[in-house]
Length: 159
Image (cartoon, rainbow, N blue to C red; front, side):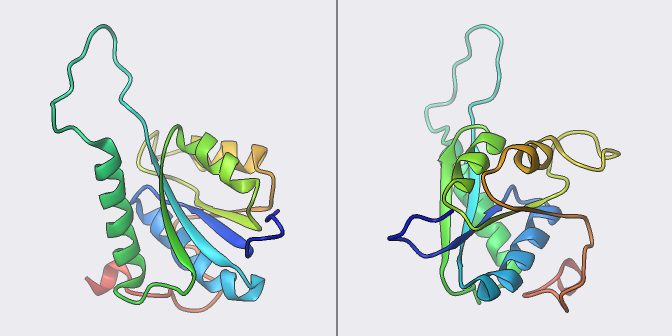
């Protein structure tokens, strides 16, 4: 749960997928009822390699991750970001970054499927790991999930 000197937070895992954009919208619906702000979190890791690999001098995966986060926020909300929203780009495995963030969160919201893995799986590896290991409640948003009214912000149909 949140520390005594910080307001409650809803942590949202963002990878730019439609599922994570939907998770952002759900967090924006839920946060006011929890009297909480939103932490939109994305992470990055250096790609797994075998042997020596030289990355280009201008290779900045942190900048790429920040761009993915900004684009996802625009896709979810347009120019009207929810009040109390904070953006966070962290180095590390996404499942571990979100699990760590859950220690100070009221809730974690993740999409059921991200950008990687096998499309036929019902639950992705990150959402599965976070649901099992988080220190707070976890809401896993399935693709196309509705139930709290219309989406907050533009939908893919609006583009």
